[in-house]
Image (cartoon, rainbow, N blue to C red; front, side, top):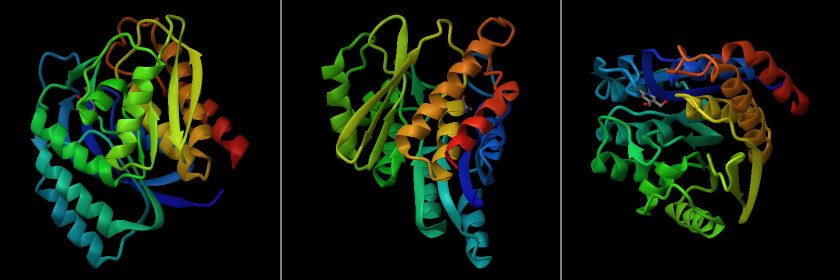
Length: 279
Ligand code: PXL
């Protein structure tokens, strides 16, 4: 296994199993060294708690980048998730431009919405800035809500393949080379992910678990990134991430006290094995 170092840019939610607290253990399990650029520090995430504290780290970003430039610190991949402000997105673009090594991939999870709604605290201005980030990414991982916002498409709860194909076509026109569209479900029993790469669409379908839980997008994007950075193809990385996320959801949904996140830790061994099959 080649040893690689990447950078992840997302928030620190102190409690709630999302963002950096999920990305670090999952990327470590995949064998990847991961540096962090925190976008904000929150007491807990914004999805379901009655309130939260929020320390915006936007103005730290250019200072941190400047220091990394002095030290000639480069990364073999950059993976972005939940960002703290629209202004920050331009700083993140500077980091990608300056610190991503040749041949490294920029993976962007436009984490900003789900179930037809923007997360608390985001607005149209943030969506417009996210469109600029997505344009520069090698790989994007939107869910259907995010895909609709990025392409100015009406969100629908039920849809058919024509609607999804239209969404994918518009997403590719945005500029990202590879699109991983998550949470695509054509019937009540199954869901899956559509992978668009090199002009070809492939669908990986698996069982749908009712109930769902918060933070599954971060588990998915982190596992996908870990597998991809290890040299696994986008489709196989999408499959590994889907199987792992499904196991984690199955392990979590029965526990009604655990609504705020995914109990992924006991399943990390499965992810290590799945990545190990390929590398
Ligand atoms: O899981 C996405 C996410 C990340 N970070 C914060 C969030 C959310 C979703 O609600 O609130 C702070």
